[in-house]
Image (cartoon, rainbow, N blue to C red; front, top):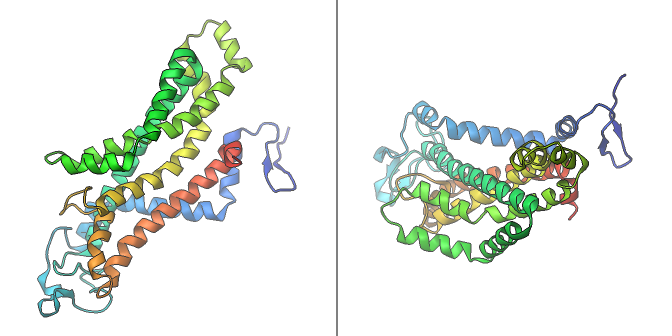
Length: 315
């Protein structure tokens, strides 16, 4: 029996017999040009972050190496040459005053920014999914306690707390601390989504059949409930990532994030504000990297939400 892909007048694919939801989702995503472009941008920056040491060595400069020959000491340390000192030696120019290679700092900044954002997202997704499934499936007192904890965390002034924590914590690993603090306040949103999905799944026939068949709560949660909430979780995960990237950049911009000389896009943007009129490329390059990464993840997340969680996209 051959299978076909039928479409409604709104051009939304409808699963024909034998077509699973994941195959349908892949087919829908492949036909969207915005998804292809966004995915290419995301992969490019992930490769840049993963290969930062190799790319830095290829460019010939470390992110902390000073090149005084690339700046003019008589003009306040302005880069020599056009467009912020772009040349065969410095592919994206140099920083004013210090002469540090901007290409090396951008690729290492991608590593730091994406490491913090993706690790914090992983913490949020794991904690939020576990709390949401537990609250929705067990109900009763478990649901009450977890729901009140979600409300308390969401009502807390998270940005102020993050700034305070990062300001008072002196002799700690800043990357580890930022990851933990950002992840601490992000889990309630996805927990609410998962809780709602779990409430709609726990009384389905196949879940009741598993319960009658003697399956314990752990087996039901991992074998029956978790696959049912996987689609919305994946969709919302890609929507969380740009927020995490922006949060890390904002904290670094405010001076309470990653400490110099460790490069970070937010930190570079903060330092470039003083030179935007004399060396605009110093401001444009890290800002463009941050903008493209956030935009790509946002467009990819919107597309995944439309396909994997269509009810959520209409609310």
